[in-house]
Image 1 (cartoon, rainbow, N blue to C red):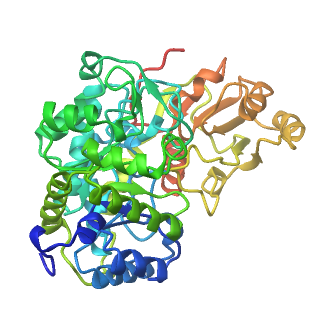
Image 2 (image 1 turned 135 degrees about the horizontal axis):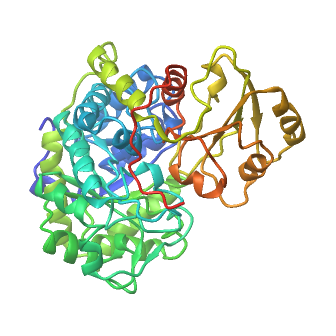
Length: 512
């Protein structure tokens, strides 16, 4: 590995830096990055959408960060696919997990490879994906269609194939969120989810995807902030020795990289002191601990200093540090080759073809009556929601594209203020058919109020994200799912509606 010291050559400060991952502000190599990388030897940097303006910009920045680091950097992002992407343009589009599961799952490995190959070309080498959670709770507010299925064996196969596709492109995957975030009704960004299951229970479901990934050689796993009360009554997984070392490393035999989800999430931050967070997470067996949140430099310095004091005071054994850093350096030797930025040959025609077909094949007709096909003589009204983000991990629809851009019909936009509800109700009488798009419907939210006022004999419902929307939409006779609300999925949806051609198979069970 170019310019990489051996473990015995590293100072304590350099070792500590290798076990930290921080977010940052800006789109250029600024004072914050200079301080983190050059002064404190931080070994991993995470980029968010606000750090990325163009392909050229992020390529240049990633190259600059690598050039200024004495030890090669892990430079990562959340590129799950679909609504959870940080690089949006100019690379092969990766649909979300459930969309791929519904459409062409046989392409999962190759499509992940094609997208990751593009990310590798612009300087990334670690991806905080894929999602290995089994979405076995329909009320889950944060995983949902980010999961491949509610079936553990399906998630097991598809998430492992995705991870291996990433590794083939020399992007280190970190399958998440161990031991499983699927059976929760709380978003760990906003609170502490609690799962009251025995080890025997989770071995039958939640652990199955992670066990397969480990057996197939997947080299990274991300730890969740979930309190599995029967495994550790005191600490959530990310701070739990019982779960990280006892379960993941010893019982399941995982030898790869263990990284935490961001420790600034509300499930952790504010509930524990910085000292408690660092001490417990490192002693639990986490190799890299991640901090995003405010990304405040002074706070980041405090975390670094706290870490150092804990080691000096022998509250964190040096043996744990050396074991983790040795593993980090070994994996950096495989994944962190320093390369010149290359953004001239992104988005291969092969990758784009696979992506376009996979997205088209994901559109699912759950059930319908006699309203389809859409005929040239039909008067059709599209009612489209003003999108609210499903969770804090989602990207905003910055350009706010709607289905009406891709279909030759009238369109009305509705939002939670319901200012135009009377106009919509009156206008529906002029149309033969009404397409209403929904996005993560909750019981009695504004979308249900619009739906209640529509003539159900004319209505075609398109669930843009969660396939569970139908649970809140009684007397629906025509129901379709896209699993993502991206430009690519809207184009595929329009193509399917015009052709009256649907290939997707619902990857979850719906009890109506």
